[in-house]
Image (cartoon, rainbow, N blue to C red; front, side):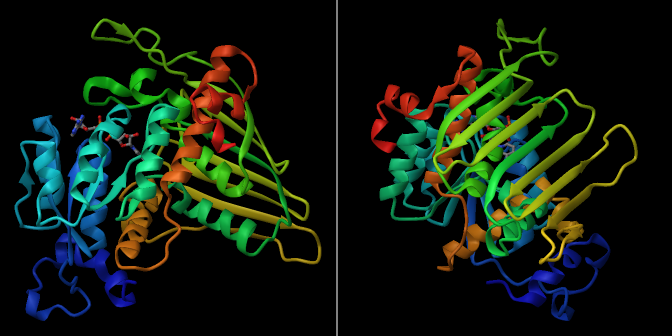
Length: 405
Ligand SMILES: NC(=O)c1ccc[n+]([C@@H]2O[C@H](COP(=O)([O-])OP(=O)(O)OC[C@H]3O[C@@H](n4cnc5c(N)ncnc54)[C@H](O)[C@@H]3O)[C@@H](O)[C@H]2O)c1
C-alpha cells in the first residue's frame, strides 16, 4: 500500500510552480522512484488517461507505447513529458511492445473490436494486463477472454472503473458494508450526456466495432447493477433508438447505426430488479443511481451543466427507517485526482492494479465480472432489435454458453 505522506503530496509535487525545488531538497515533495514499467497499447483518449494516472500514481512509469496512428503516439509523448523527462519508447509492432523484457505490465486501450486479437498477443508475454472495457463486442469473444484469464498466471484486470467513482464507492459502502438500506430490492441508474466524441477511424459510431452503445458505454452501469444485485441476470428487456445523434453520419460509405437513447430493465435470479435510462443527446453530463431497500433509500448523483459555468457536483443522500441515521454526503477525491478523468475512477482503478501486483487483495474488476457486464449489454442490444424480452439463458445457449446458467 502507498505511504500516506507520499500519496498525499504527489499532487503538489507535480504542480509546475514547485519544479524549482532541487531533488536533494525535497521531503514533502519527494515522489520516490517507480518500481514498475508499463507499456500502453493504443494511446487515444483513454490510453492517454492511463498514462497520466500511472505517472501520477507513481509506483510505475510508462516505458513505451504502440499505436499505428502517429498522432496518438505524439499525444502519448506529450502526456508523459508532463511528468517525466525520460523519453517514451515508441514500438513499431504490437509484438515488440508486448515482449520487451524491461516492462512488467501492459495496458490495452485499443478499440473494442480489437481487444481479443490484441490480448492473444499480449498473453504470450506472461505480463500483468489491464484490458479496457468492454472486454469484447460479443459473447463468444468475451467468454474466450474470460477463459484465457482463468488460466493466465498473471493478473488480468478489466477496465470497469466506475465502481471507483466517489458516488458509487459510497453507494456500495452504504448498501453492502453498512447495510443502511436493508436488502436492496430495486436499482435505477440514469445517464444523460452529450454524444460520443470523435475517435480514430470513428469506430464508436458502428455497432460492429463497438458492440453497440449498450455494450460499449453501458457495460459500466451493468457492472454496477451486478455489484448491487449480487446475483445473475435472468432476463433483459430494452427499448431504444437512434433518435438524434449521427443520423446523417457516414464513414467509409457506411451509415452509423448506434443507439442514442434506451430504457433497459434487468430481472435477477434473486428477485432484484434494475432499470437503466440512457440519453446521449443531453446538453450536460449527469449520472444518477437510486437504490431502494426494505429498510432505506439511497439516491446519488454526479455531473455538471456543460452549457454554463458549472462545477462538478457529487451528492449521496441516504434516508433510512427511524432507528438509523439518515445523511447527505458530498463525496470527492483530491482535485488533482478527480481531474485525471472519470472523476478519479481511473486513478483508483490503477491503485487496485498496483496493489494486486504487489500481492495485496483488491476488488478490481475481473474477467468474469467483465463477461457478465457484456452479457447484459448484448442482451439489451438484442432486445431492442427483437422488440421483446430476452432470456439470458437462451442467449447464452445460442452462443454455445448454456453451461454458464
Ligand atoms: N473505462 C472507461 O471509462 C473508458 C473510457 C474511454 C474509452 N474506454 C475504452 O478504451 C478503448 C479505447 O477507446 P478510446 O476512446 O481511447 O478510442 P480512440 O479511438 O481515442 O483511441 C484508440 C487508439 O487505439 C489505436 N489502435 C487501433 N487499433 C490498434 C491496434 N490494433 N493496436 C494498437 N493501437 C490501436 C488507435 O490508433 C487509437 O489511437 C476502448 O475499448 C474504449 O471502450 C474506456
